[in-house]
Length: 62
Image (cartoon, rainbow, N blue to C red; front, side):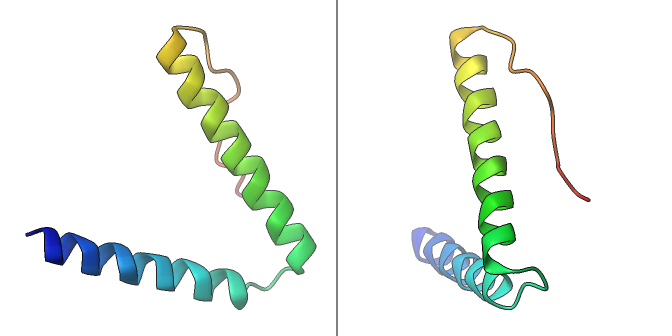
C-alpha cells in the first residue's frame, strides 16, 4: 500500500517537473506564478489553522 503511494507521488513529481520544464511561458513568469500560488496557499492554510480569515481565494488561472 505504501509502495503504491510512493510510486504515485514519484510520478506526480516527475509530471510536475516536466510540465514546468516545458511550460509555454518564460521561466521567470512561471516561477513568479508558482511562488505567488504557493504563498497564497500557505497564507490560506495558516489562516485556517489560526482561525483567521484566509482572504482572496484563488486559482489564478489566466
